[in-house]
Every structure is written in structure tokens, then in C-alpha cells.
Image (cartoon, rainbow, N blue to C red; front, side):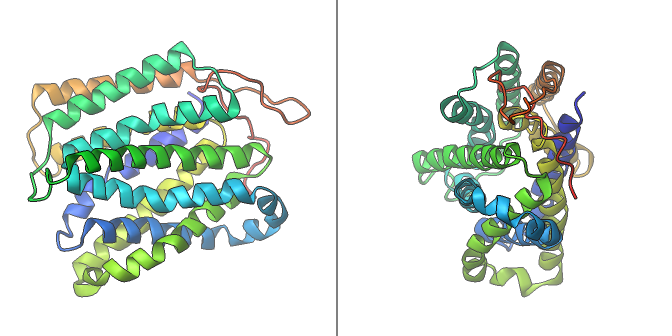
Length: 318
């Protein structure tokens, strides 16, 4: 299994803990949770990578358009994702947001980078999205008063969340492919995204400091799944395409379901176990169909399936 897949799998496992953690702070709104977790986590990434960002500042400036597009997507994603769940319900918001990301990444790569879509990627994505759908149907989550108030808008925001997740993944890969290591790229993208989220945090984050437990939950979300998780995700993006990474990260809902069963004692019906099986089958298909490629001495990536690696492994983090 390529090392990039392992890094993305590790990130998805950390992301899978976010639902259980957020449930421990019911008084904090979804926008505040998203803004704080992604915003603070992004600023931590920038702080940790500040030295290498300064070293590669010239190359980052040369790619500033792509960096800014990715940073904007980082800022929009958590707001769209949590709003989608609030308006359309947890089940619909989750399946639309997570399930739409791999196809969105492939479409972006196809249109912008002219990458053809491989049969292996299509099979793995189809099986994975089916698994997410089955798992969500098995565990829809509690209804809320506003869950069905604006379902169409909620679905639209879920599609926006999936698209922005794919977009910032693609943008980070594109900058790395230009010859930059993952640390300065992820530091710049998520640091700028964190700055863009600060106004949201200021406007909605008052409940976070109302209790020590709320503060502890937000600190965990910012440091572990967001900071550490996206550090690992960046390492993965250095060697796999965005479409592959978004497909592999479908492991996230599987981890969330297993935590709910083992930690919270929730019951998972047969369709849920089927969904888990489909997700793990998708990961197996995607991992076995992904292989590293080499770039030419001119630095150009040969056109190929989206599950082929973008080989920038020579640019090790410094």
C-alpha cells in the first residue's frame, strides 16, 4: 500500500472522532464548532510550518492564486458542512457532503488537469459512496426542529461542502506538484483559511468559553483531528491525487460509526454493517489500484487516471 494512502487513512481515522467529540459540547452551535476547529487548527498548522513557509516564501508567492483558492475553500467547507446538517438533517447532510467529494475531485482534475478517469477509481468510489449511503440510512441521527425546514438549501450546502473539500485538496496537490513540500503548502493554505474563519469564530464562539468542558472539546477538535489530521492529510496529498485522497477519506464515517457502537453503546442494524463492509471494500479497491508514478526531468506529470500518484516525494518536508 502506498505511504500516501496510509497517511490519508490515519487522517480519516482522526476525523472520525469529531462527531463523538462535538456531541460532548451540545451548547456550542455548529458554526462555532466548525469555525473554531478548522480556524484554530489551521492557524496551528501555519505556526508549526512558519519556518519552512518562510524558506519557501518565493515559491508560495508564485502559486498565490491556487493557494488563495484553496484557502477560501478551507474557510467555506466547515460552514457549509455543518449548516447542511442543520438544514437538511444529519443523515442527508453527511451523505451529500462526504459522498460528493470524490466525484467533485475527479471532475476538477478532469477539467483543469485533463486527467482521465480510471475504471478502478470509478469502482472504488461507487462502492464507497454506496457504503456511506447505507451507513447513513442505518444511523440517521436525531431529528431537529430545523432539520427539514429548508431541505433543498441543506442539500445544496452539502454539495458545496463536498466541492470545497475537493477543491482545497486539489489546490494543495497542484501547489505541491509545482515542487513544494507538503508542510509549507498546508501551513499556507490552512493558515489563510483559519484567518478567514476568525470573524465567524468571534461572532458565534461565545458558548465555547462558557464552560471548561466546551473549551476542552474545542481544544481537542482543533489540535487532534484538525491540526494533526490535516498534517497527515497533507503528507498523503504529496503522493496521491486529490480524487484518490477524497475516496480514501470515506473511512471517516466508518470510524465514526464504530466509535458510536463501541464507546457510546449505540446499536448498528444489518444495513449499517453492510455499509461498513462496502467502505472497507472501497478502501481496498482504491489502495490496490493506486501506484506511484514518476515525473519527467522537466517536472511535468504524465496524464493518467486520477488514482495515480502525484510524485513529489523528492520534495521531503524540511
